[in-house]
Image 1: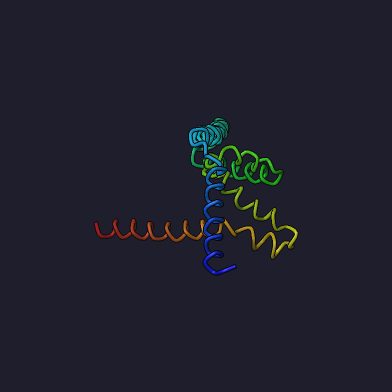
Image 2 (image 1 turned 90 degrees about the horizontal axis):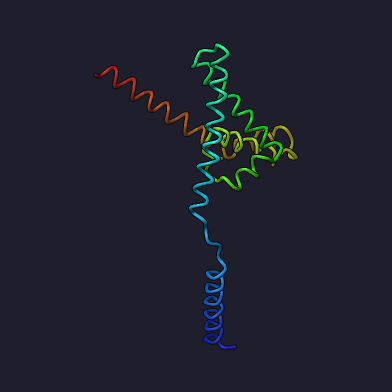
Length: 157
C-alpha cells in the first residue's frame, strides 16, 4: 500500500470514528441533574438544620450545637460511604452530594476504603488524603492569608 493510500485510509477511518462517536455520545440531562442536585443537597442541609435544632432544644448553646452538627454530619457521611450507600446517592445527586460537608467526608473515606488492602500506613493513612489533602492545604493557607489581611486591616485602619 502506498503512503498516500495509507494516509487517505487513516483519514477515512478518523472521520468515520468521529461521526460514530458523535452519534453515540450520551446527551447530558442538565435540568434533571440540576433538580436532583438541588433536592439532595437541600435534603442534606435540612437534615443538618434539624440536627442542630434538636441539639439546641437539649439546651446546648448555638455555637456548640453547630460544632456538634458538623461532627454528626461528617460521621453520617463517613458511615454511609463505608457501607457503599453514599456512592449510590452521589450517582443520582451529583454536586448535591459533593458540596455539603458530607461530601468532604465521603472523599476522605472513599480513598481510605479503596486502598485498605495496602495496609494501615501506606493504604489507609497515605491514600486517605489523596483527594482531600489539596482541599485541606488550600483552606489552611487561604485562611491564614485572609486572617493576616484582616489583622493588618485592623492595625492600619
